[in-house]
Amino acid sequence: MKKKDLLYVIRPEQQNEAALQELLELHPEIKFVSLMGVDFAGNDTDEKIPIKIFKEDMDTFLHGSAAQTDGSSVVLPGIATLNDARVDMQVDTSVNWFVDYNYEHFDEESGRMIGTLRLPCFLLHNGEQVGSRSILKLTLDYVEKEILALWAKHPVIPGLEHVKREEVEKLVFTSATELEFWVKTPREAAPIEALSSSQIMQEQYWQRTRGNVRTALEQTVETLELYGLEPEMGHKECGGIKGQIDANGHMTHVMEQLEVDWKFAGGVQTCDNELLARTIVKEVFRTNGLEVSFQAKPIHGVAGSGEHTHVGMAAKLKNGKLVNLFAPTDMKKDYLSAIGYGALMGLLKNYEVVNPLVSCTLDSLNRLKPGFEAPVCIVTSLGISPEVPSRNRTILAGLIRDLASPMATRIEMRSPNPYTNTYIALAAFYLSCLDGIKACIESGKGLKELEKEISKEAGEEGFYLEKDRQYRTEEDVFEDFNAAERDRLFGKPPATVWENLIAFDKYPEKVKVLTQGDILKAAYLQSFKEGALIRWCTELTGRIIPENIAAVIAMRKLHSADTCTDCDLSLWRKIQGLRTKLAKDSFEELSVFTSLRRAIANKDYDKASRLKVEMIELMEELESLYHDYKQNIID
Image (cartoon, rainbow, N blue to C red; front, top):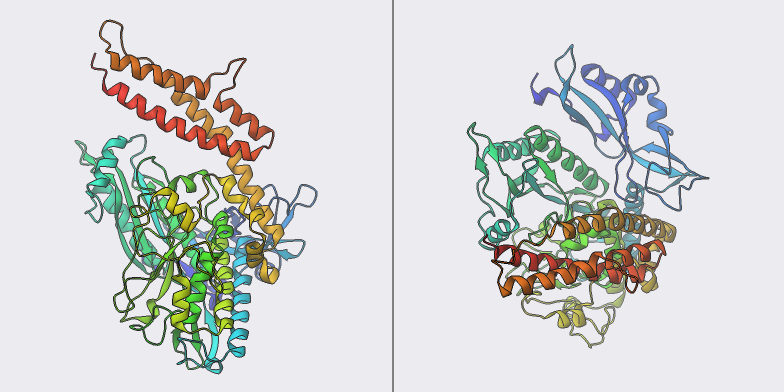
């Protein structure tokens, strides 16, 4: 049985009882059904329901409550509570359904891989849609309605004079993600120095893959094609070192960073495709004896993995033609249309309350540090001039333009990572865009005036953007500004998850932008915050502190009295002082680790946040000192 003969996708027009019964009869290798709901943490549910049950009760699956779970199984804190825990699953018949194949389990009769039909679902609590998929779908419906109403009120939109409102059938929200990830040989690691040096010398980027890494990457691209994701590229990213080949011709000591890209889609389908792509990458590389990590910053001191998210908007006309609503009539004269400028300004102005929804883990904030092209500042770049599109990779929101292809005009958000909940992030992006679009259209200003607004200096009054902030630069954010200048011009970035989450309390007017339309409700933001806070505290106390304690204990004295130098003694005194400060309590003073644990236990999150920053700084200093100390021991 060839792979191409398997059933990979069931499209919306096939999601009726007659068509499904026929497809499932043709593909007896599909033995299970799984209902895929997505909670606020971005977790997708998975279970194995025998296909017989689905066939016998297909009407209920398609039109009723397909199954129930409870609040302990999904992350919906404060909504699905212990005394009101039931969560229903309602199948979504407006998107593609995918068949997930088990590469290691085969049907005895047909010899085909066993498949599970994954049914995307909305999560409902007390009859109300509450999951991530629902929030994105309802948000896009709301944004479409609001923009079309705005367009009817203001028939001539600057930069879109060639499009008449009465010609528009509907809006299309085009979006795309990509996956960067690290791949390694199980139980083998590479020294940080080698990884860092290789990155600085750019030895890996766009290099040729070899051995089982090459095989896995090629198989991944082929599999994405089978599922209709239309892969565009698979390649090596900047991180990694050259692997080795053992006596049997197998690759060992693999430590490489890769990326795969596929074609854009619309709204919820974009996010479903991303979940599928992540599963395919994991499974394909695992069958080739390789481990994959989608962590944003799996290795300190080396480039992390981003998941740049592209945001676009088009109008489908009644004659079938698509028109990009971000692209201006004259691409050589203007950067954006009024809708494009509004979308970009809305993203930037409201990003403080969007950021917690994008970066809500320790790992995600570890990536967002100066260097490695990770965005740390709320700022955009338009390019040197409309006639010469350029790209600044040091900013948060990049403008992607191609003079020969206006349909390619879009905004690239560079902050998301592979574990960002893209459903929630896209909902927040488009709600923020809507806020800026309304302001720009209702201002009555022309394109040059809108360009002036987004290009204003800090301290200059704007009609929409905040007076004391700068929102555009064509400079290198990391090299051309120091830390104090970045904080003053672009806003100080959060150092911890807690600092990020309290933005919901610090910026109530910006929270109103996210809750407009009563879809991404204040209760949902609070639930998201509670879930993120629980994970932050748990990871600190259950993983980070124990790992740091183990690292501190492992830093033993290595020098001997008869061969040590004054350098050894001086370094060891500093090391011992830091070890004590971090890990050893006395009656007079508690260690940083103990103080941090107690602050979390007492729910003093401000103090815990400060201690977390102090812990990281002290650990980095300690590791650097101990590295130098070990290097000087030659006994």
